[in-house]
Amino acid sequence: MDKRTFVKSVLLGVAGVFASGMAVKAASNRKKWDGTFRMPELPYSVDSLAPFADGETVRLHLQHHASYTDGLNAAVIAAGLNGRTAHELMRMASEYSEDIRNYCGGYVNHKLFWRVLTPTPGLKPAQVLLNAIDRDFGSFDAFKEKFNQTARSVLGSGWVWLIVDSSGKTKVTFTPNHDNPVMDVAEVRGFPLLCLDVWEHAYNIKNKNRRSDYVDAFWNVVNWDVVSRRFQSASKLNFNLS
Ligand code: MN
Image (cartoon, rainbow, N blue to C red; front, side):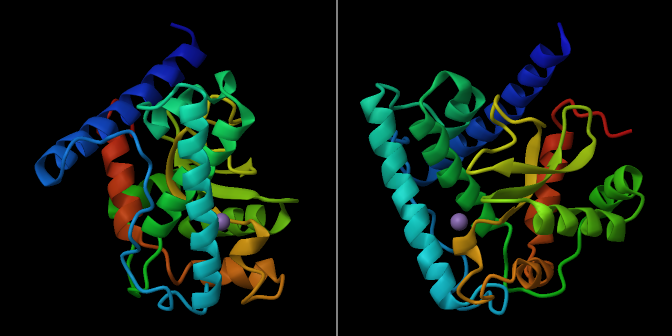
């Protein structure tokens, strides 16, 4: 098995377990997924993330998310792909249209974004994640600096990520537009743990184009419980963390 195939199969495994976990949950809570992508409910109020993002920014942002969701539903139907999960679509993004790639990424990336944010202060990464970050970046501060620098220096719209790759290494990456590190078109592939939207619509109301202030405020609203859980789930799936 070559490296690319290996990476692909690990990511398939990760996505598969997540998909089946979701299916089990769906079966117990509600009826089987009907193939329609839906907006998640925000687990906090639209005003509660300020000063990172004020209510007006979050509402605008949710409108974008809703339009990506509608666009994705229309695009999969038009392409005869309804019933495919978002992970399935992302893993084979190179084989589908630009519309599917962009709408699917826009839909999934925002869904994760809302989940990795929280108004609850004082959450900390789990020790196992801290250990990996220390090993891979030198220190937690060095990781933050790398993430901040990436977010501040990239040109144009996109997303900054903390990912774990198939060897268990944590990395900071950037994807342009609405690409996602699970996509086969991503330059650096891996399982997303944390993401930051650096499209202008994410910060230009509150911060008046000061991306730097937006990036600094991000660290006060990261939901490290969710990020740590994602890392631990990924690490159970054949990721060697030693
Ligand atoms: Mn956005």
